[in-house]
Image 1: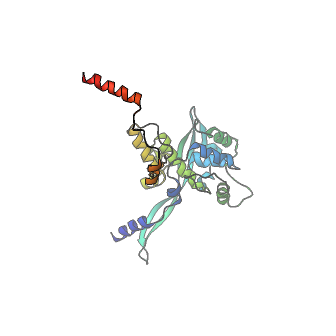
Image 2: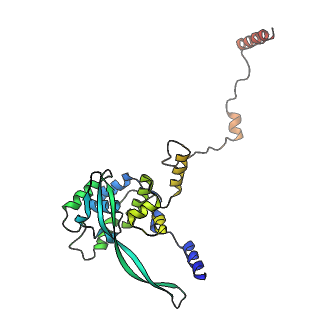
Image 3: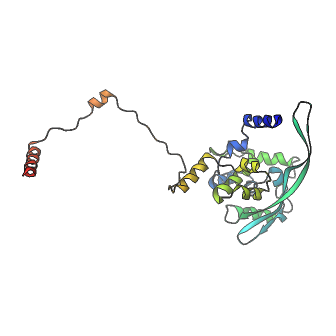
Length: 270
């Protein structure tokens, strides 16, 4: 019980992860397209976003994993890393909980719609490759080469994207896009990414305040939807001297107006 309380306290006090900080909602296709255009290796950005894979998993994509159907492409048996089986648990000398784990490699199969931007470009690139899609023969550390090619892209300012992108940001954005545009629920998103934990799915695809506002507007049948917040400009009230100096409304009637009003009153009394 004491350990459980300590864990809960640590979770409350921990800082936001980069995914929590930058994946509030889907950034939009226009921004993703611009990043693809700015990259010196556009097929890498396409693969990172459309597959939603980790950098280590992207590096093991091969041409045989891509299959074409009438309306969608299918990525078959893409590797899933960073998964462990817990073999044992214990408390160390400092009173901290520890786990003995074993790395497990699983696979996931998922679709990419042909109607999605640059999906056909990614498929055509995959079919042209021989073996792995992303590899740099002259570089020993493939992961850092991938990270560098993403990090060096100079992107325009956007409240939902960091100044320097990182590979995992595209994974979070894909999860947000599946939820925002396709209305996938947590279970469906877990199936797409082959996640086992609800906490992981909520970490990547939790609803932001903006998303909640969209749901509330749709349920209340408010149109059009608010894409950007509207700024209400508040004007200070005029000072007394300004009010006194301003032109006053006319209160005295002209002779013609007086005669007209007199006639109307007499007629109403008859």
